[in-house]
Length: 111
Ligand SMILES: [Zn+2]
Image 1 (cartoon, rainbow, N blue to C red):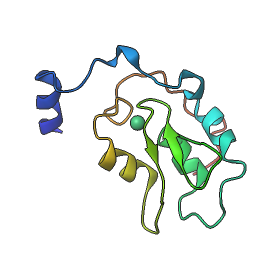
Image 2: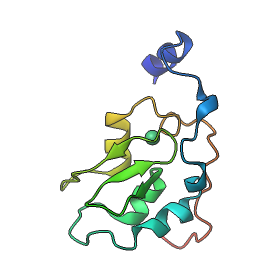
Image 3: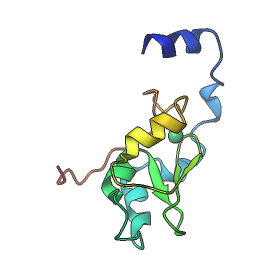
């Protein structure tokens, strides 16, 4: 965390005014609803992906982040949505915890 704060202060991270890249997917429920045809063989579950800011593009197992707009695919056993997102795109403002307009699920039933 300290290293990240240093990077932010030095301006290495781009301005967050252009985020989120996909504002229509700022709602977790909207993201979750894109996973209808999600492959059942995938080791990562739709709810977990939606909570990590990701929505389904309807092709293979490729998902996109509503905030940074980056893509992730090729999910393997042991992967976690948040873990892969933060590993590949550590400067995503959603990953960094910035207020990018994310709306958590209103369902509140999952655990
Ligand atoms: Zn992201």
